[in-house]
Length: 307
Image 1 (cartoon, helix red, strand yellow):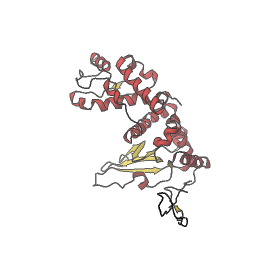
Image 2: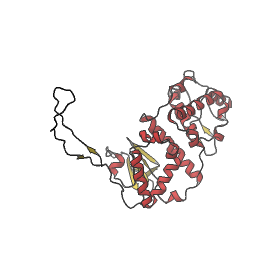
Image 3: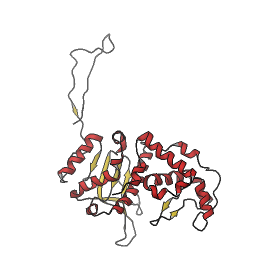
Image 4: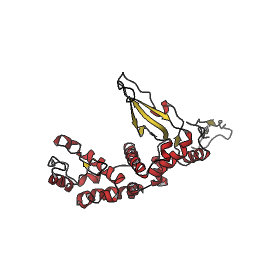
């Protein structure tokens, strides 16, 4: 239990002297936000959650309210989007903790985890769903892997699927979540994005378009300028973020997003053909070295990890 001690001093002729008979007030108990252990998860899981809180000051919660989940209630008219977290079965708590460690926490150095590298609240749910007004039964909900609100992240998936997840499925889910976590770090100024990155490519001159498989010369010119795809299909085919001059004003933000995707989720084998372009390699290496030297985080270990 944390305490605050209030000491009353009456100063005399010496700046820091106090009367010897000055009374020390009673300790004031500061209530904790959550009482651990929360409930009937396995003892191993409850002990792990307590250890995480003791070490990093972060709560890993499997029992929480809708108010905890949203921080503020959703408001608005009939077309409002309402997110709901469905609590998971506590028997899967340790499975979820192990999953989060495998895809996230084990890649972070201790000092980083202690300096806001873990959000104050990490909530573990079975499901996160969003109600959609006007949709027919069976289609009225959208489902999500995560929700970020303030200094908390809620992760879905604390259920039996954790015990049957294939290696490929685990990599796919990791690739979704690690980008979310990285954006959380950047938005909360826990890590930054190096300004030197933007000194390499030309963000003024419009690229030749269209950029697609039917126009390989345009694709090659786009790569030569240091630009990567926005996404990749399951078969590896790229999808570009530049569709024409109207998308060029967002070139810098798109460039940042595509390179974070590359360094955090694309394996060495998947990046090999792209890194044959000198400007892409320069920007890629700059980011990898930046996060390693400044934060001691090996982003390539994340992207190359298998399960």
